Length: 420
Image 1 (cartoon, rainbow, N blue to C red):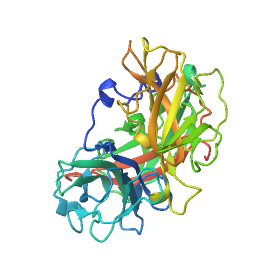
Image 2: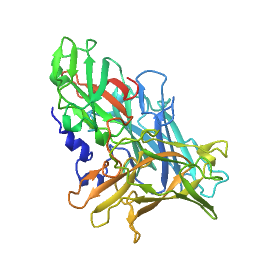
Image 3: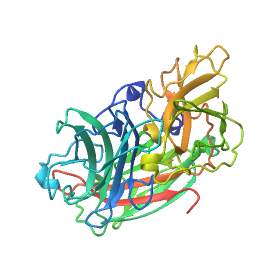
């Protein structure tokens, strides 16, 4: 399976149609009043939402409803294959318990300008328990009607049956050695009854938990006993990109590093310092959270209910006019979606700007440029691209037994460029 590193470098979305559409099998928010969606392994906030099958591990889902009051939200999980198509299984085949459940754990905001209701649930629980490993889509919907979707999240349930070893090196392509990171890995599958390793196992690899950057490895480079080796010079070559930008609003009483001004009236307004174009010749070390965000409030007791919202004003000196293209702001906080809500506006002073309503906390973000000429998103034009960038890589191993109607998730490994 061959991939052009330049395609990965300049277009991490397949086409502009990717950000014009949403599907019920991706991370999506379907209502404008739903904010601050968190979904992570309960052991650590903002972590990858993967849990071991049959263990005591859970994932935590939390979100705010800014419409106020309480509403009837239900949720369920649905089994999917490695490419997020629904499996040909009935709920009874992948769930040990009920088909769905009501979301009963909620609390009202306290002492905030913006009133909201915070909802939270942990999965598995006594009502929703996955029976088999694999990809699951978590659906939250209103009034027991799945056509009234509120949000969806991707969940990974791992039944570990393989082991993985991996290393991250500079690209084998001379022209990309200063910008790209190549992942080589080996899957040991002696614990599986594999008839054809070239078709029974496939491996999905993504950077910083972003499916749009992912590469599906359908065939190994070669087979060595019960080991599948993936190290062809042309595969798993990722743009290193750059460290994320960030801001800190854990306190709205004083300015932090990236805050210019804070205004308080009937709402909170925060003006951030202007952002420059960071596409520079050389890498500059910055510490980031690989695109994540954390809901935090230094001035309260429980950020789930006493962290306030603020209108965050961003401005970008892109050195590009609106006749050339459009700038977008993305991060885990908005599922990296390129849409009207993440689109920046060009002003008469030659800068791009937008304001977002965000809950207090620490946020990573970056800018994406969509050229009018190519219509393709590019997250390196405004941010830069460097081999030295610290990145996480999530490696997921899928297995379909001969004659089976579903794919199992039999291995998961978290890699990091700085921890090899």
